[in-house]
Image (cartoon, rainbow, N blue to C red; front, side, top):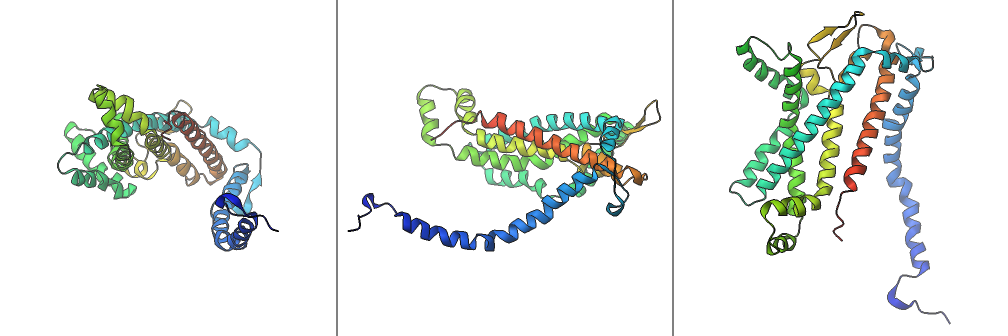
Length: 308
C-alpha cells in the first residue's frame, strides 16, 4: 500500500512534474533576454577591455601593446584633475540631493494642503533631458552672471556650483518620491507608540523614521552617487569643461571637465592615436564607479533595520 502524504504537503513526484515544464520553457523565455544581454553588454565589455591594451584608430587595426595605455592615463594631468573634480562633485551632490529630498518627502507626508501638487512640481524637472537642461541653465546662469561682467565659462567655481545646482534641480524630485514611498510604508502604530512613550518630533524622526527608511536611503544614495560619477550630458551642455588652464609642460586642463567628458574628449579628440588611452580610462572609470557603489551599498545596507 502507498503511504499517504501527511500534513497536506506536496509530494516529491508533483514537485518534479512542476519543475519539468519550468526547465523545458526556461530557454524559450529567458533565451532572448540572455542573448540580448550577451550581445549588448558582455561582448562589448570584453571587447572594450581588450582594446584598452591596444593601440588603434579603428577596431580593425588594433595592435596589442600591454599596459602602455594605462600608464599614459595615469600620467595624464587632465584625467587626474577630472577624477578629483568628479569625486568632489559626487560627494557634494550626494549630500545635498539626499538631505533636501528627504526633508521635502518628510514635509509632504505631514498632511499639508496641496501635497500632491507639490510632488508633481518637484518631480517634473526629472522628465527633462540632460542636454536640454544644461543649455537652459547655461542661459540662466550667464544671464545672472553677466550683471557682474563674468560668465559660467570663465570661473571654475561658478561652473562647479552650476553643475551642482543643475543636478540637484533634476534629481531631488525623483529621490523625493522614493523617500515618500519609504515613509508612507511605515506602520502608524510605530509612530503612535513613539508618541505615547513621550518622544518629541525630532526624536521620532531621528530614532524611528530615519532608521526604518534606510532601504530607501540605500537606493537614493546609490542612484545619486552613481549618477554623480557618470554625469556627462549636463557637463557637456553647461560648461563643456571650460575654463582652461595650462600646465608648465604645456598640457591643457579643462577645470570643469568630469571623468565621462574627459574620456569622450580623449577618444574623439584630434589625436586619434589616443583612442587606446581613452579606452583604458573607460575601464578605470568602470572599476571606480563599481567599487564605490558596492562599498556604499554595503555600508548603508548594514544600517538597515530588520522590520520582520
